[in-house]
Length: 139
Ligand code: CMP
Image (cartoon, rainbow, N blue to C red):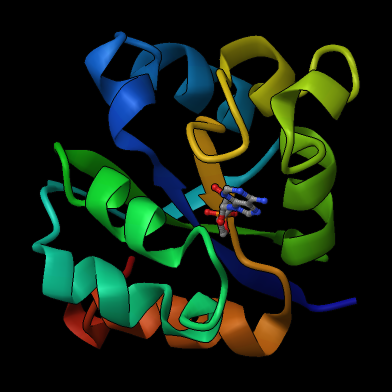
C-alpha cells in the first residue's frame, strides 16, 4: 500500500500542560514521518470552519470555543495506511474508553479535551491538511 497522510492537532489543553513532547515522541516511535508542522492559535471562525462537519452537533459551539482557546500544534503525518494507523495510536475519542498506552488514554482528560485530533478518512486528511498547509510548507 502507498504511503499516505493524516492530519493531527495537539489540542490546547495538551499543549498548555506540556504534553507536546510526549505526544510527538509517541508519533515518532510509531514510525510516522512529519511532513509539515506548525504552532498556531485558531480564531473561533477558523476552528468553526475546521469542524464544520460537526455543526449540527450539540457539542459544536463548545468544541469551537475550546479549540480556539489557546495555541495548538498542527501536523501532517505520513505512514503506510496513515489514517487507520494513527487512529489506532490515539485510541477512542473518549479517553476513558481509549486502550491502554494510546495517546488519548495517556494524555486526554475528556471527550472534548482528548489531547489530539486525527483525520477519519483519506479524503478528510487531504482536506484538513490543505486547511493548515500549502504545498511549499510540506517536505
Ligand atoms: P476530534 O478527533 O478532534 O474530532 C471531533 C471532536 O469532537 C472530537 O475529537 C471530540 O473532541 C469532540 N467530540 C466528539 N463527540 C463529542 C461529545 N459527545 N461531546 C463533546 N465533544 C465531542
